[in-house]
Length: 198
Figure 1 (tube, rainbow, N blue to C red):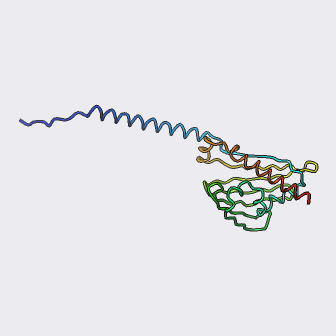
Figure 2 (spheres, one colour; figure 1 turned 180 degrees about the vertical axis):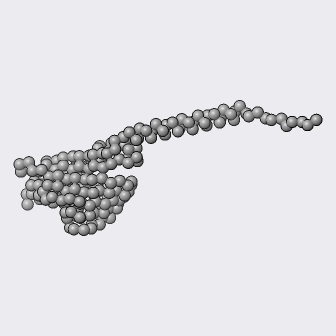
Figure 3 (cartoon, rainbow, N blue to C red; figure 1 turned 180 degrees about the horizontal axis):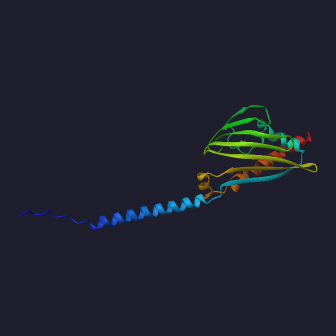
């Protein structure tokens, strides 16, 4: 007579742990799925815009933007890393002029190129960030005369990829960048008004 080996039933404790792990995994997958849907539903584009009225002619204010060599005096990001490595390419100013920067974690690494320049009216830039994260956007400065003053509008527009959309869940681009625009325009105002008096 052949004896059959006794089979040991699974431990209730091990079985319970396995169920808990499976349930936890299912919950995690569900959360990731819901978050992915929420992220995908975020706006496909973003726009940040600020204005300032400056007591100086449009051509004076325009010159502060049209020449990258002058940005160091008013750009809010220049103050974040005075040791940043800056390089210039192309013409001294205007269309085709390019500016590269590489600095600390606050300013990162990137490139700006002037793609359109209309004296005392418009400066259009292609802005590309390399670090801390890769992204591209278009930046526009317009200069509108208002009596003996100039209304300057600084606008940045771009597309939101999946990573950018995810970041929008925890931070507001308008609040994050808009404050720097206000700071930059205030510095530009001071410099332009002093230049207009000379």
